[in-house]
Length: 302
Image (cartoon, rainbow, N blue to C red):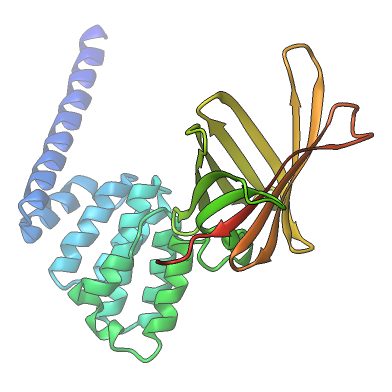
């Protein structure tokens, strides 16, 4: 009995080794772009029951390069049916988009491009440069199709909430409000394709600080995280743009257990002026006292 079990184990192991060798040969041929022989080896390895999404994806690419477009689409769909991780899912969908573009099925190609973008893959360079999309680029509605993909790749570009704080973007001289006393300079930049603002602050005393400001789509509000050269990170939350101002809430507790509440506001005075105002309360919100009141004046081109 032991001999039979051992024989069966050896047989199973031997079959696995042979299968693995076939896959390695197929992958080696794939890397050499020997599409026909790679295709044969993938088919011999997988039969029709394999659940290896990446192998189906590669078989599809072999068929695609051999001009077997219908077979390629079936292979890519099998890859997707096996619920692969995003990199393989993105690869299979962009390749399906290429096949649909080659066969002038532009609507289906656009759908696959959107699906590919949703995995984290950026298909815009492919759309703009690959020969497979040449005829699609010549279509009358290509601009509309590209815009749909662009808005998935760069979701903040078309989200009006993400631009509510754009009035703060620029280079500024900063003064005490109502006075000509210069307190510092600030450069506020749009970063991450419009998904955040980066503040770069330098005071007149040469201390520095930065804040990152972003619209949290899950919370439906703005957040600001600040850290200065003197330490003491600060977090402002529940930011909303209303009544001509971006308005944040602040709450912190010091090591002695004393709680501080705050209202932090950026007033959009005009295109060249922003007022930044912070008021704090140490009596649980019964009274508030100004912490500082600054006016940002946009630097003019000389």
